[in-house]
Length: 381
Image (cartoon, rainbow, N blue to C red; front, side, top):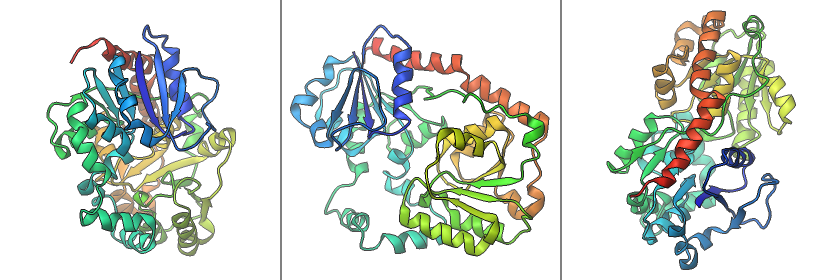
């Protein structure tokens, strides 16, 4: 049997579990959802799913079961999963499927690098006297241990890393001092259906999307300031803020309205998938001012549709995608060229990006990667 442990009942987890089950692998998949909730809202109609509270993961009766499995896959490396591993005598392969927050916002040295100046000031101001701030202070002075402390204690039990982008593997080996780790290429989902818009229509789209969520790591303030200094004509600047920190979302909504006026449209409510896909097909540009890998679903959708995408040059996603040959750009180009930077990709560039995407994220490719991951259950350590 193969053990999967997910963090929380996320909308996309249902699709991931279905993808594993579709492989019809010879070993049975068992799925645990680490949650404090008593029922699932998003995961439907799939067998072999169990709810487990975080504190139950670290109990001896669960830990003793781990060697009954031939492979353990951790989808997001939480504190309690780390404690579980550190207490266990593991004799099977263990894979850490990195999502992003479990790396960048767990390791203190990485976390310090994520925020630009104005965003960091707002973060410190909004965080004061909150539970997270108090927790940060207690952690800083060693009164309580942070997630990274437990991850570091457990890292020797992990055999393989499956990051979202390949260069995160070296980041983990370096920052966790873990040369024993092995890399495995894995992708959760393939290209999306129904998003192959005619390139000739895409290049007519003038609207710009910023970021993917209401998170400080998006560094919205700095990119809004940049756009506020150039002539963006009648373009709409759309900012998804329905997911994340509500207090931060409201601040960015007000800040954007003040700086960009009628051009600015914050998305503060969730929208249905059909409406969402229609909205995504109306953009010509995407700006990702993160200094970490984040929002890859939107990035890949943008590449498939034909957006001209601008990244913070310090984002490892930029160097990763550039190494694969994608036609992508940095925010420095907007600073240098101002409104002239918003010249669309050519049809040839759009088709090139789509071809690279199909080569790396086509259905047959992704299915093969799922099987490769599951095949680790045949290996001994």
